[in-house]
Image (cartoon, rainbow over all chains, first blue to last red; front, side, top):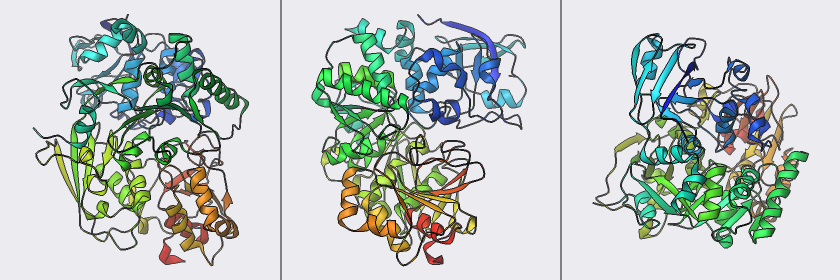
Length: 179
Length: 403
């Protein structure tokens, strides 16, 4: 069900100095005060609700927008809500140099596109990737482009299993197709 | 080619080729869900599989430790939803009286050397302390595991970490652990399994190994093993095993360590933070919630009182630890020193079941995470039980030598 080509306006998660924020943990993405919520549709308003400078993200984010984050995004707890809150906001994809192991799995299993960008820190520091830019990426081939600035970007194609689950819709649908 | 520990355990649980970077379908010996994640596991399960039974109810468990007993109506509802599901399918529940799930799994003999265990707890890799491949997973993964008894997993690379030298005689396992958080950061063993070698880890007792393995998550690793401290050929690396990296660290005369806000990897020598005013202390968590941890704290506290301006919260990891502490007179003694004694569980780290920190409050904690806002708006410093005890006596960050 997942689209091979994703295009959207980007939000670059930078700190006050303009650097990509690294090691953003799940309590900053989706605080433990809201863990009792089990309905995905209700999780959106709490996305990035504990990340300094980004607490108004759910109000600003539009459907299909792409989030660009620093390395080791999703460190910390195993909470699926830290993925589901972006699903609820209809975020198009998350692009980061790397993700925490559990976070990455959770996203893959939900059929939510998490993509590794290979030189994101450099692009951001050189101003080649800014909030508001439009990025288009192909999750199969790894081709990507900052559309507005006409710059080619490099992302890692999805692995076989990630793509299989992504195309099936989620881990459950993939599992049923296997059986 | 020889195999590392993680490669051996995975190979014993799959028919697929085991090589770093390969995706395998792995059999899960035990699959668990907590009251955190559990309700969503149930929801996923019932939406996808309706009333169909799990792959094996005897290998499936709930462990309630996050908000135990429930302190909000929503948490109570969530726990009850798990209980109802468990009853319907004949699944055992280690309920709110039992304490931290990962520890209960070890106490119950469910997490054994060479086995695979998953649960909705990012510190499930603490089970590396007993040579078990424990892994924290989200509610989609765990619901799938309940139903199929399997999971997909990318075989991680293994990094060998050799600790050279002998730490100071009273150095705590936590000091060693925080030192590794400092040196390895979130990069050096990221997404890899780690094997730790050297005298410093070889001599760790069970409680020390628990502390040590519990924070591999904070180093962005998959799991850590201490092969020299656990028995069994199935959890020893082959002599010709291949490592992607070998990291050597000198831990000679290592002084006490403290992690400063905003992360467990912002670590300094205790000396650099001494004297900072402390408002509260916490001893407990899956990292430092064993009998030995409270006994060490009591060694420092005995003959002293928790300073009047300080609240010290004590949370044993499990009911069994609690019982042990009662039997040994440790809880009574800690109480008499002024500590607040709470029931077993994840309180102190998660959800604020053992209180939260207010804006401006400084807490010194034996927990494993101090990310901004996690335990409230205060500033959390991570340290060993001995340092927390000394700091609570002095009302400022202090070491055992200062009391």
